Image (cartoon, rainbow, N blue to C red; front, top):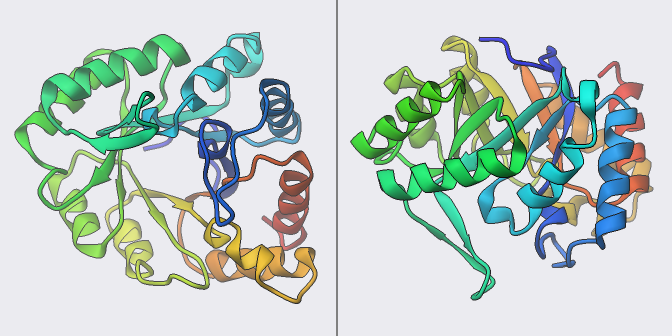
Length: 258
């Protein structure tokens, strides 16, 4: 079940913050040049997993434009996106639609923007949707396009259990941090079923770094240590839009052998 860029546990970059307002302090996305600088810094620093989605506003478009400049450096990267949650640019909000037609249109658009997808995940996956006929059909369509790694982005243990039971998925994505340990059982569940894990919101959308009297380096290290005490294979996804924050996170990650 390996995919490009796989490692026992690596640090990846979630790309929500370069596409729309997000985070504990609801910060807007960076200017185009700053987003490009962040992505270039990540690749140069050895980040190999990048996670985006249609519901992340302009994230796929920005990231796809960057990928087109990489040439042979694109090889070895794990480019992950999702379908199921969609972005309404006019309203400035997202909505969920897991119907086959909506999923197929979303995937076609993502492929056009990104060029190639290494991992496709069902966004806002639930017990009801992970094995739904329309979703399974859309995943089969994805496989017909050469996408062999499929995942589910879940927010509760029951959805993770259902995804494992379906037998279609190689990856599970979910939030986990020191303020939210609800999904801790999913680590063992994924391990039993041979699934890789993408941990999102490791710093609680920035809350763990802002609402603390500790130095940022200490908060980063302690937050990562809580996650890396779990047994899993996959990635921890930092959602920063700051080059400095990315470098600090990489240093903290690597300082403990990550």
